[in-house]
Image (cartoon, rainbow, N blue to C red; front, side, top):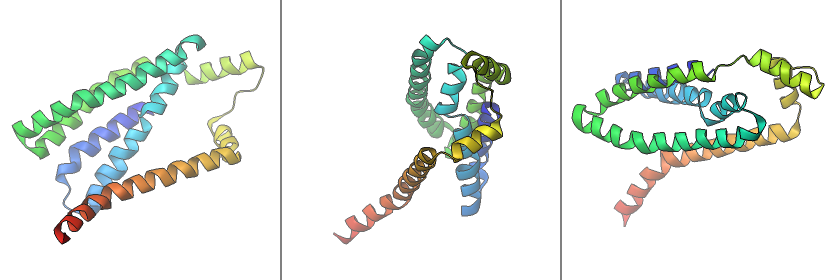
Length: 177
C-alpha cells in the first residue's frame, strides 16, 4: 500500500505541470497525488511501524512518525522554494516528484509479514484472524465507524471547499471596499 501510495504521489506531482485542463489537474493532484498521500500517509505509516515494535514502544514509534512528517514539511518548504527560484515552478514540481521516490526504501523497512503478524496477534488473543474483507465488513457494520467516516468526509469537503473558494472571495471583498 505504501509503495503504491508513494508512486502515485510521485506520478501525480511529476505530471501536474503537463496538465492543460481543469480535469487534468483534478486527476493529477486530486486523484493521483491525494490518493497516494492517503495510501502512504501518517495513519498507514503509524500502523506499519506499530506492528514492528513491541507494545510498550508503539507510542514512541507513532511519535517518531508524526515528528518525521512535521520535519519533512519543514524541510521541504525551503527546498521547494529554492527549486522554484532556480528552475521554475514546472520543473520544480517534477523534481519534487522525483524526490518523493526517496521514500521508497522505507517500504522495505516497514513491510513485515502482515499475515503472519495478524495470525500471531489472533493466537495471542485467542480469536480467529480476520481477512481484509471481514475486517472491512465488520467496520462498516459498526455505527461509530460510519459516523467517524462521515465526520472525516464532511471535514475534508469543507476544508477543500474553503481552500478553493475563500481566497477568491477575499480579493473580491477587498476590491469592493
